Image (tube, rainbow, N blue to C red):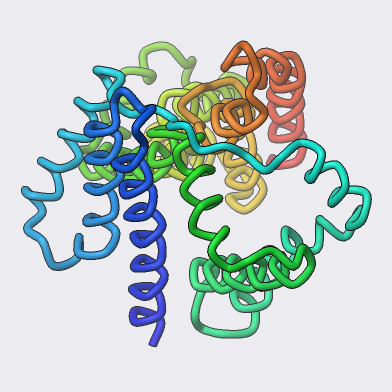
Length: 304
């Protein structure tokens, strides 16, 4: 059942990409309409039929998408947002109720993950569907705008929207290739044997730095825990639950400081249309460094 539901959600995600491709192809004002339409079309095919395609073909399609992005052939078209006056009127009418659809996603994801065997990903998908229906009821907007605004938002975010998936796959690839063992061998000559504080600093800082590279703390966790956490922290008597939890959240200190965490830092900047695409990161760096130092102290004090 879980597999069937997930396949259905992937098909819905593919449909949104297909609409974005169609909108780009029809956009006469978009100078890169062929490249933009091809990018979203390939993504749609991967979402909808990737399971049935040879892995080499999916890899080739991803390479084509990368080339299109590198040569700046994926751009936002002339799709316009709703009139400013209309949006102001609706915001006054709806008020704080606008947060109800967003909260609906979290409630569905938590509820389905906690009380069923379907998992959080299915909950997230059903939450998104429920939130869309609630938003339509609240705003009394026509259903046809779901496709239009979904396409507009996807094009506005751009190619960065698929970066989290690619980075998660890269993390699994690094771990399978034994990168953690290489890191352990390299760092063993730097950290004094038996020095708990040095091990804790290396674990937390290593998580933050590798997360900055990978863009995803979950992807970094397996690699850094195998390379630094196990030989230099856990082997010295640290509580695995406390040290592991603090290491994972230390990784998110790196998330705050990297453009590779596109869904946290680049996508919001794109949606907010900031002049500097790294504005979110620059604002977060001081707090991230303070949080990283706090994690080192907490792990040293609480885990041993």
